[in-house]
Image (cartoon, rainbow, N blue to C red; front, top):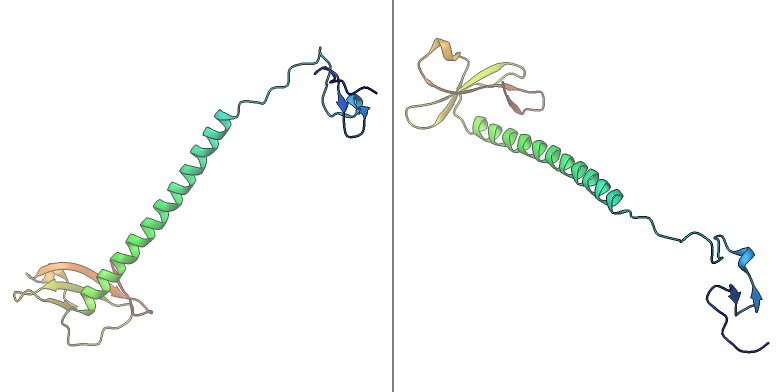
Length: 133
């Protein structure tokens, strides 16, 4: 065989020295349909939007949980830092007020039964955490 270059439309494997058009997984003839890669831009954009939406949703959920945890921490700091001269009972409701001296104090007296500056109502949980009601 001569070392001449075969035309582009001829399917010739130089390694094996054979014509292998019948072995190819695609049509190789001149009249075969044009092989084009599909445009996946819209598919990518759609999936990017879905993924971004999912990640934002998870982020918003985590942020809400974080904000709730910070609120719980601040509430517990506030109530445990308040003045009270009794041992609170788990499950009971207590009211937090701001005294004239600027310090918070805890009481069993409801806001409608007094004239103090009401801050909030709390319940002591079994984990010894104060939960705002």
